[in-house]
Each structure stands twice: as structure tokens, then as C-alpha cells.
Image 1 (cartoon, rainbow, N blue to C red):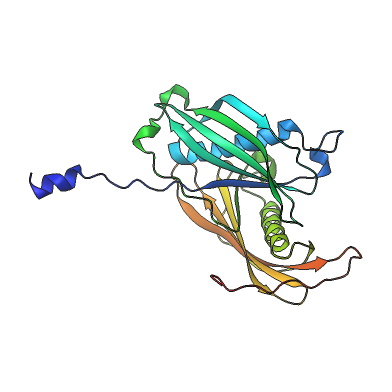
Image 2 (cartoon, rainbow, N blue to C red):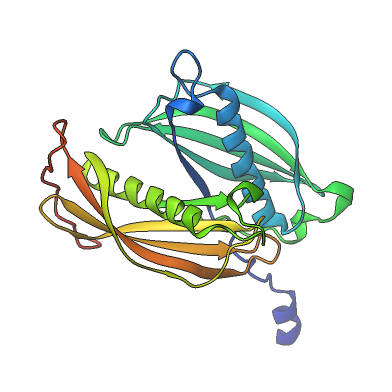
Length: 267
């Protein structure tokens, strides 16, 4: 067979779908009278992860059609981090089946336990897409602190753009998680350095956050946070903001405590 025909018949590598990971700090307002995270709140977080994963693959409108299973293994307590990951396991002509895991992480001890698992079915209304035609591999979630948020109208201004203050809140949360994971102590924000806002994030778009420790002092941790905006339909990504936050570790008496030094990458 002619080499040119072979080249035309060769499979074309499909684009990688970004990994979908959400992170939610559990506060007392999200708990029931037993002091544990509401089951409905956990399911809402898992549904959000399923929506983002499905949209990233389909690049079109998707809605939740069914929750085939939900397995609650252990409660999630106030102060813990609820980390949710989504993995697409089946692709139909107009539907996607997604497995969701919610891991409860004790930020001070580093202990992580499987808390809730579920299987969600997402569909495209009116048969708007055929995902089998565009299904690329899913990137594995990277180590470190990264998570994605959906921008809803209640955190946007009258122009349907994310409030700068809410962007800072998301970035502060990422810095808090990264710093706590580094030292496994209680941390508080001591300062924020220059923060540059480069591109707006509109309602319905995804805000992807990545935080990394770049410097440590005796009791301080400097965390750099990148905020990237992703268009859910086109997949286009652009840096929206970057900033640095100084977090300080404190003991039970509220006084600063020593933190481990930052390790060079690969060491």
C-alpha cells in the first residue's frame, strides 16, 4: 500500500482532557446536627465534578441524567478537606458515565480516607454531541495542590464577571491548603504580595487553580498561586491571575512555630 495512504489511515492522537479535581474545606455551616458533612452537600460537590469532567470532554451542554450509585463509607468532619476526583469510565452516543471519589483529608496529620464514591450519568440534551468522536485520554491529576471551580452568578458582578474579591478568596484557599500540606500545622495568612489580574472569568467558565510553595522562612511559607480561566465549550485556557501569599504556622497557643524547609523539585 502506498505510504501516503498509510499516513492518511494512521490514527490521529486525540487531545488530552484536563484532569478534574475539586477541593472543598468543610466548615460547620455545611454540617448536620451530628457535626458531619451533609450527604446532600457531598453529592452536590460530586455532581459538580461530574459536570466539569463531562463538559471538558463533550465541549457542549451536559446535564445530570442519573446517579447510579452513591456509597457513603465514612463521615467528613469540619476542618477536613473534601477532595473530589472524576474519571470518565464509559462513553455512549450522547451520554457519559463518570466515577467520582471523595477523599477526606486531615490537613494536620496528612491522613486520607475514602469517604464517598458514586457513579453519575451525564447526557447532552437533544443529542448535541457524539463524545465517541472526540474522546481523548484523561490527564492524571498532578501531585500538589490544584483544583477547579465553576463560576456561578452569585459570585459575579452585574457584568457577569467573577468579583476580584472572590478570585482572591479562591487563591487564598489554594495557598492555605498548599501551606498546611507542607508543614501539617495550623496556618494563617500574614500577607499577600503583588497580585496581577490579567483576564476576566465569566459566569459559566472554569477557574483552574494551582498552588506551590516557593519559599520558606523560620515559621513562614510563601505560596505562589496561578489562576487560569478555561472556556468550557472551546477548551481555550488563559492565565487570569497570579499572586503570592505569605502564610505563617502557629501552635495551639497562637504563637509561630517552625516549619520544614522547602525541598527543591526532584529532591
